[in-house]
Each structure stands twice: as C-alpha cells, then as structure tokens.
Image 1 (cartoon, rainbow, N blue to C red):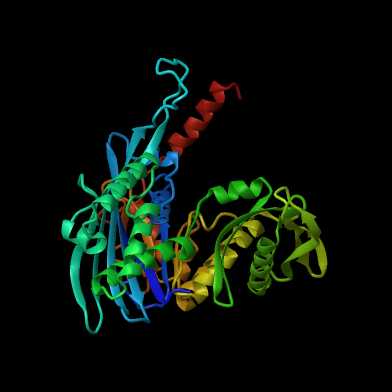
Image 2 (cartoon, rainbow, N blue to C red; image 1 turned 60 degrees about the horizontal axis):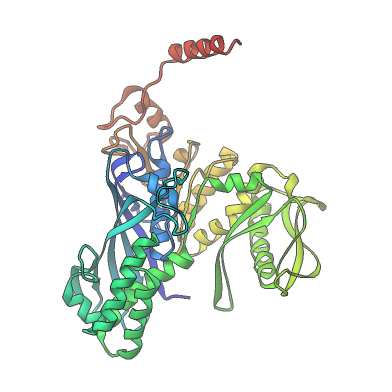
Amino acid sequence: MKEANVRLIGISICNFKNVRQGNVSFLNRRKKYQSSVLGVYGQNGSGKTALIDAIELLKLSLTGRKVPERFADYVYVGSESAYLRYTLMIRVDKGKYSGDYQVEYAVGLKKEKAPKEENLEDNDALQEIGYRAVLFDEELKFSFCNDHIRIKKCTLMNTTTESVFNPHTKYEAIFGKDEKLERKLLIAKGMATRLSQSFLFSGDLIESFKEQVRERLDDQMLMIYWQLFDNLLYYAHYELFVIQTNNSGIISMNFLPLAFRYEENHHGAAGRLAVPIDAPAVVPEDEAHVIDAVVNSMNIVLCQLVPGLTIQVQKLGLHLMKNGNKGLQIQLISRRNGRDIPLKYESEGIKKIISVLQLLIVVYNRSAITVAIDELDSGIFEYLLGELLRIISEKGKGQLIFTSHNLRPLETIDRGFIAFTTTNPDSRYIRLAHVKENNNLRDFYFRDIVLGEQDEIVYEPTNNAEIAFAFREAGEYCGS
C-alpha cells in the first residue's frame, strides 16, 4: 500500500463531446470535509456524461492503455481536436521525500484515419475507413514542497517537440545524454501515437525511468520526479475507478460487473469482474477468493440497506479449466430471511447497488480513492440514494464523483458538493449563485429552471402544448 494520498481537484475540458469549454472544481469551498463529493445535475445532453468520460480518459492515459476508438468521435463537431487538463494533489505522508505535490496533466485528443491492414489492397472499394483516437501534446507540470525543499510550479515534460520531450534540461536530468536511449524513446513516442496510447505513461518510458532510478538512488531531484510518477501510476491502476452506464447493459445480459478495491495482509487487488448470474460459472481459485471476500464485506452494509438481504457465494466444487488450471465452480445466491434464490431473480436496482457497493464502502473508509459513477441513481430508490450520499459526504474519507437525474441528494448533501450543467456549450459547468443557507437547493433549482436567475441558462425551455401537438402529429403519421 502506498504511503500517499492522490486526489483529483479539477478538470478543464475544451472541445470534448458536447462541451466547447467547461471547468469543474471538485473542492467544496464552503465547508471542510474529509470526503470529496461532487454530484453533477442538468438537462439531458448537457455534458454530465462528458465529465465522466473525461475522467475515464485520465485513467486510460495514466495506465498507458489504448484509448478506445469511440473516443475519436468525442472531439467536438467542427473542431480538429479536444484538450483536457487535470489538476491533482498528491500528499506523501512518509519517507525521505514526504511532502505535497500539485500536478497538472494536459493532453490533446484528435481523430485520425487508422492505417489500412497490410494485407488489403489500396484500391479495395470494400475497405471501410477506420478511425482511431490519438493522444498528443501531453504536458506534465508540478510543484513540490516540504519542510526542506520547495520547487515552484514548472514543466517537467512536454511532448510538443520533435525531440523526446521538453524542457531539454529536465530530459537530461532524468535520462542523461545516452544517444542510444534517446533513439529508443523517440521510437516509443512514435509507437504510442500509432497505438493510441499516452507516451509519457507508456511502458517504454516508465521502464527507462525506473532503470535510471535504480542506478541513481542518491539523486534527490530524480527521486522527487520518480515519486511523482510512481504515485500517479499507482493511483490510476488501483485507486481510480470509472463506472459507466454500460454497467446496466452488462447486468441486463445476466452478468454482475463487480467493481472492487480489496486489501488483505498488506496485499491488494483492484478492478472489475463480470460474474455470470444466470448459471454457475467456473472461475480461477484466486478470483473466487476475491469474490468471496468482496461479497462478505458488502453483506455487512447490504443487509442495512435492504433489510433481510445478503448475497452468498455458493461453491459447487473444483473443476479443470480450459487452460489446464484448477478452477472453482460458483454461483451467486440471494438470501432473504433465510431463503435462497439465484441472484438473477433480484431486481435491476438490487443488482446495481451490489455492483458498486464495495467501492462505496472503500470511499467511505479510505481517503486514497476516487470513484466516478455515471447515473448513480439508476434503479436506486430515491430516499435510499439521498441517505447514502449524506452518510458518505459527511462521514466518508474518499472521493466520489457522480451524475444523477434524481434530485433527492440536493436536499441531503451540502450544496458545495453539487454542480450543474448549463445550456451554453462555452460554459458548461457552474455552481448556483445567490443560494441562501435556508434555501432548499432542490426547490431553488426548480425555480431557476423557470425564472432563469443565474448568469447561464440551466434548462432549455420546453412547451407542453407543442409537445402534446407533436405526440398527436406523430400518431397520425404512423396511423395510430
């Protein structure tokens, strides 16, 4: 476990999906809480999911994974590229270089034609033009301070150059003047573009960085630079989770997308498992152990959320898997008041709660965790949703970012934890102004939809008479 706490404190979005410009701060400037919660509310199609997708892009970049092709279509229509800037805080509590970092990571995103397969003729009329998402112009800035060292905000790496990265002084401070290594990194830079990956967090650059660290453990600046990278990598792999709305689609296909962050005896695991729920499934023994531990921890809370309900992992014996390894056949069972039924017969709402509950438990208990969930309210009873968020915001330690259409949380959590989208693509995210302490934020928001008292319009007005006429006209068109 890392002796560091990484937290996302702001995002700036430009020409991404339906956001021409939007700035979001995750800090609650009204009151001091251990937790960091941000709920984003607004009209359909006004940029809520764009924020979650932007956080997913951060995770993909920091983990050096390929950016899916769908991101190529996320560049704002009519624009050549999108730009995103992320601000993070890193607090290192122990060690020789304990202290506080403020980090800015910026990245461009553009759409390019994917290279044709080599085995296809150039004049093949049936060849479908494919596109890929390309990351470019990455920049990493940081500042650092502790009781003995103070580094003002500066650029550590910037890839907007034909060399490996600028500033050249920082490059030489990390990698020296080895020409062979420089050629290797230039090739890696080109491959990262071709493979739709981040170069700054690519495997080749990270491994070369590690090699320098192993050889120069007494180099103070190098160790500060590496500590920054190492904590960002750990955060992205083990402490940053993004749950998209396709979770609900996976559930409808009779799989439970079980998201978890699990730790035992100072060893941990993190990720998501798609566990079949319509029939028994054979899983590796170590995976079965993780599922068992995660389910047991969830049950402590689940029976309080839904009285009388727990989930059981029914073990049906050892089986030989296709790869020759031993596996365990399991089935997830719902137990209500002593009676067992297959989990597939539970409601979609129950399955949704189970799929994210372990992460909510971790958010409550650990400060070093960020969970972003799109449409958290989907399938969850509104009163329960409001109370869950009240508990996490007031007594939790981690960071939770969510979108929702259910307005109940506006009445249960501090208004410093709430942001709204607008109808203006050039200013997509705002905090409501002129709200008094005794105002009910839900009622205030409804009033603002009608009266439009903010600097930006938060709802594109609809006309009930025109909607009714459109329904009637559509019915006549199709013969109804």
